[in-house]
Length: 75
Image (cartoon, rainbow, N blue to C red):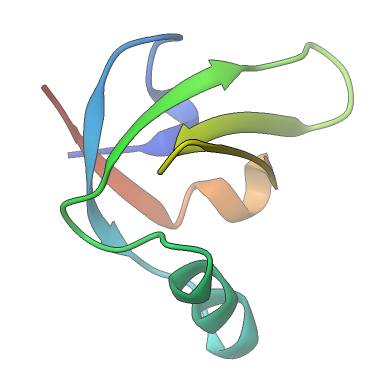
């Protein structure tokens, strides 16, 4: 398992564990970040501290500091 921010671009993976605290974790679960869901990293800009992931046909931007609490298994 690795955190989603360290996943190579375009490599398919499955969500393994969703960490975080309180409201942040709840919001991720509401948006479909559920264990077993296929996901892949779309973009990792050099500036801004954000990453962009795609899951369930939607793209979501996350702060890198928050993304470390999302663990994935590469396929």
